[in-house]
Amino acid sequence: MIFNTWSFALFACVTLGFYWSVVPQRRKPAFLVAVGVIFYAASVPAYLLLVGALAGLTYALGRAMLRAGSEAQRSRLLTFGIVTIVAALAYFKYAGFLAATVNAIARYDLVPAPHVVVPLAISFFTFEFVHVLVDVRAGRIVRLDALEFAAFATFFPTLVAGPIKRYQSFAPQLRAIEAPAPQTAALDAYRILLGLAKKTVIADSMHAFTGPLLGPGDPYGRIDYWVAILAYAIEIYADFSAYSDIAIGCSGLLGLRVPENFAHPYRARNIADFWRTWHVSLSTWIRDYVFVPLGGSRGAPLVTALNLIVAMALAGLWHGAAWTFVVWGLWHGAGLAVHRAWVRGVVPRVAFLRDGSLAVRALSTASTFAFVAAGWVFFAAPSLGDALAVFRHLFA
Image (cartoon, rainbow, N blue to C red):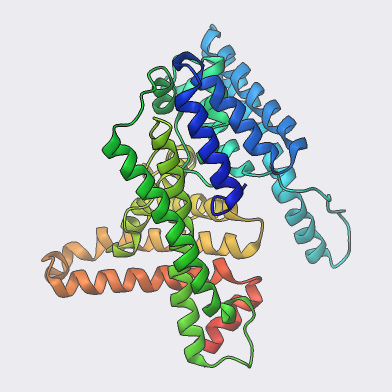
């Protein structure tokens, strides 16, 4: 079910009605599991088996790690779990992409592409499962309850588009669910309406102007491409943040809180600040479970730059199985690496860059937005050739 549909509105209203008027307090987590299963089954019911299998595996391995008597045992269980979960994600989401890439390089159909339907929200629930295993291994999760984990895995407001939750902050809330105060409930309802307005009024309206990015060519003039880039920047922010608003509002009405995901990212003064405010649950996940394990910023500057680029390339690939998304990630990874070098090597030596004047702040914000908006060309274009064609038309 998509959030901006009447079917979801009916589903959410019926769920909330039963949740607060019929379901007793101790049964609320089980009820959340049941409605989460119904919500997921509305897409491709057969893939409930996949979600259930991966969730069961994650829970079993997590419990086994908690009981393991040695670090070596925990490490082996963690490795097995991550490899299995990532393999499932790779097969269902990326096998076709990899086969097409190999065949394009070989100019021959060497590898047959599997014909599979990508399971709904596989990127989100696999990331949450990996987080659980890693945090159990690191000692950040010291207790796993079967019902709480099932509610965590099937929580329908965040199942489709996030935010990506952390088990250690979500599970304790399930033990003390309370009805939100009237004022809080009103704010949550407002958040849902705001998200619907962002999606239907702003994001969907901007789509009318983004045609040059989706199919560049002679019918469009240079102004059309500039307008399309600006419209797409507005569209994707309104679209992504709308789903987060609806998820956060629905969660609040259920008496539960999930992380905020957007904090005025287009006001960012640099690319690092942008990623602290854009899709926050994803950027912090990439930081904690990709960038830091790669070595983070502990090594030489060039190694740190490489870690940033690799982490962001994976973030790009997470968004979609296409080279356009990989290049978009590389674009941001390179931007983060250059910004880090700029802050450490240039800013300390130039006085007016350190004074924080209005002119410097305005220029920093404008240049950051321009960099981000240019990157959206790779995100929106159907192919790298189309993306390059857009840039040629912009400056030809």
